[in-house]
Image (cartoon, rainbow, N blue to C red; front, side):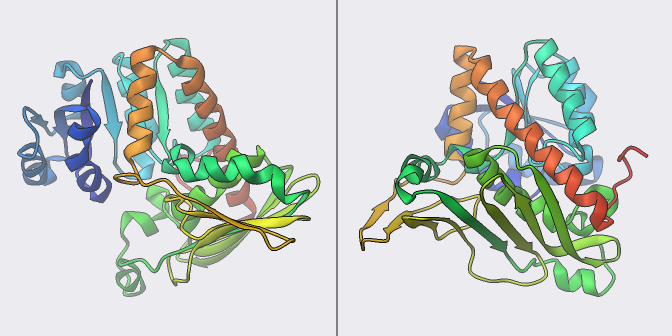
Length: 327
């Protein structure tokens, strides 16, 4: 299946070498005029990829059935909308959009036109995540869930000096919640559905959250979800129940090995090796498109809208506001 790519940043550089092995043909790469050299370098890694510096022109001229959007958060809605209007299926890096209103807008457009629209969330497609889900019933009544994704950003020291990279820029919908904590939220909602209430306590600097803790209320249990870009720590996800607990001792975007610990002393480990953390999602996207499995796509899209709702609700009381947020 042919894929056109928008963006030349870190995420595109990470996934591009693997796409051909996952049965995707990269037909085009689009960059800004300033990054044309980067696009040329990336295109040279592909068999027959054209280079564009105008997204509209790429949409008009490429033969690719799908577009992968790996550009800053603030551009996701507009680029996804343009691609859908051009009749292309869309894979957009997380977050799906800046706020719930934008996310619902492109989701409605995709479903109205029977097009596939995916938020690229590695979490939901990892086999070890599915193994954890399958063991939830064994730990009894859920009481506490705790996720931590804290990773000191290579751009944080520059941020402290007054420089603002997109990941720390409120104008580009940056921040720890929209970047790292988003994976924690998907991890939690993928297991338990939408919470009843959310509260976000953030460490703010120049209008952006460099770290923070999100509390999510469920009918019978509590969730604490922490993420930081201004400091680091071991990252893990734990579900505690009355009969034991489940531990995933990795970040929520990798979802690695799972260990089951029961109160009677039983310990079991579950792990499936994969080539790359993005492998399973891109294989799933391709299979669903080929089989025209809209039900699976729109089920995942509904979950992305729930996550967008949590993100939007959490930002307001924390004082995190982006330019495209409604008044």
